[in-house]
Every structure is written in structure tokens, then in C-alpha cells.
Amino acid sequence: MSEETTRAMTPNEPDWHEWHRTYDKPGSGLYDRLITVQGHLTDALDQLPSGPVRLVGICAGQGRDVIGVLQEHPRAGDVVGRLVELDVRNAAEARKALTAIGADGIEVATADAGQSDAYLGAVPADVVLACGVFGNISDEDIATTIELLPGLCAPGAWVIWTRGRFQSDLNPAIRGWFAEHGFDELAFSFVAESLGVGAHRFEGAWTPIPAGTQLFRFVGYNVLHPQT
Image 1 (cartoon, rainbow, N blue to C red):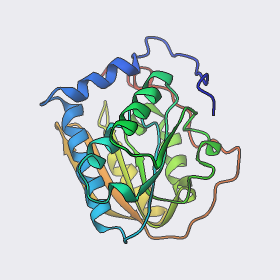
Image 2 (image 1 turned 180 degrees about the horizontal axis):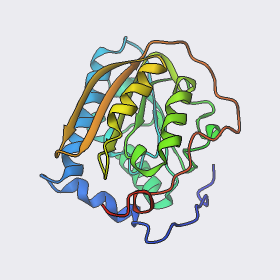
Image 3 (image 1 turned 90 degrees about the vertical axis):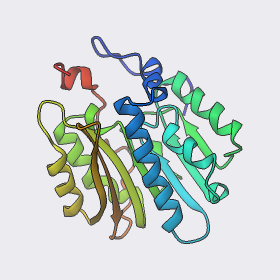
Image 4 (image 1 turned 60 degrees about the vertical axis):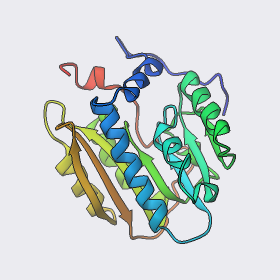
């Protein structure tokens, strides 16, 4: 999974490296979302059985959802896995931060998170993070991704996800799709009034995804929701 992995930029696409700076602003929607996601990850680590915890991050950015928790959690040493992020700069930031906190069991793959091959050798996972994903892919691809998520999840795995309301609220449909595919809802809330954050637990059996399968195509919220 090469550092030179690239993706065609969409028109007026945000600078995804600069975009992360909003996480540093207390009171911003992204800051509040981050704190909520980290709370669910903390709950997952508190409740999962003892032993190694395998974690996968989809479109993981700079890894902030994970790093903020592992800095303090007593089970940090149990966590192994892979963060998948296509932006080279963000992937480098994630690696640097993981190294700084001694999280040697987590690798960062500079790869297309929409392709099943990005997860080979890293699944089934006990925690799957899909934060900042569903707002940047089509409704059809959200449904497909949730349908295929059992291929990333070990029995009992937690999936933590986010999705903004945008012009319409797709969150009820997303919650229904999770239920249809073997997931029990553990928590759902809105932060900053418009950012949905959910946590589900997988109650089915792992069903590997065939190599070469496309889960989704990253389009970008600027294209899908131009009025936001």
C-alpha cells in the first residue's frame, strides 16, 4: 500500500489536511462529534472481552478518534489493527501521533478505504470506525457498505459511525440498514444539532468480503451536498 497512492480531486474539494483543524476548536461541531465518538470507543474498550482488541478505521484521517482515547485508556496496549486513509499528509500525521503515544500495534495504510483489499489481514475486527464516511458517499453506497460490514466485523464487534443531516436526514434509514444486517443499536445521538453519531454491535457471524470488492466510492460532501 504505497505512500504514492492518489485519488482524483473533485471540484472545489476541501483540503482534507486543513479540514482537521476544526477538531481543535472547542465548541465546533467537529470537536463535539470527536468527543462523542471517543466516548463510544472508550465504552467499547471497557466492555469488550479481555485480550487483544483488533481495530479498523475507515477513512481514518489523522486518527484522532483513536489517538485521543489510547493516550489514556488502560487497555491501550491491547489495541492492534489498521487505519486506512488515502490522503498522504493525513496518513503521515496519524503515523506520527501513534508513534508518539507508543501505539505500535496499529498500522496506517495509505490506501483507498472503499476497496476491500485495504482490509486484508486486518479483519475481522472488534471495533470498526466509520466516522466522516457516510456524509461523503452516495446513499446507495452507504447501504452497500453497511450490507458488507459483516465482512469486517468479528462477532460482537462495535461499529461507530457518523452522518450529518445535510438537506435531509438519512440517519433513520442508516439505523434501519444496520438493523437489517445483524447489528444491534447501542447508542445514537445528535451533536451540534445536525451531526448524528451512532454505535452498533454486530450479532452475526463473520462473512469475509471477496478480494477486489468495492464498498463505496468517496465523492465528497462538497459534491453530494453543495448547499452545506
